[in-house]
Length: 112
Image 1 (tube, rainbow, N blue to C red):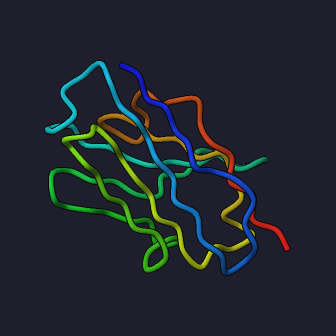
Image 2 (cartoon, rainbow, N blue to C red; image 1 turned 90 degrees about the vertical axis):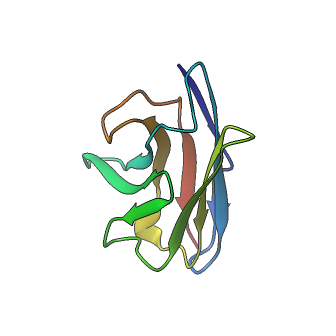
């Protein structure tokens, strides 16, 4: 299993970023995928999941973040809009469950 996140960076409050996760080494189409994040001093937080065509969101990101996937390209995405300072964290994509295998992460920093 290989997962590689990208797309993080520095954004201003109210700004947007789009995270990507390239997957390989497993059957992507039928696999539930998740985004989780880890902020300094906090525990791992699940923020979104997608299983076939069903999507799920934590209350903290609902209405601001959108998870999607491209099975042909074996890619998972997270569109993040209206970013807040508290969204600052390392973001990971995870296979199967919130605590499944993850990639190396991509850093998102929201600051004015």
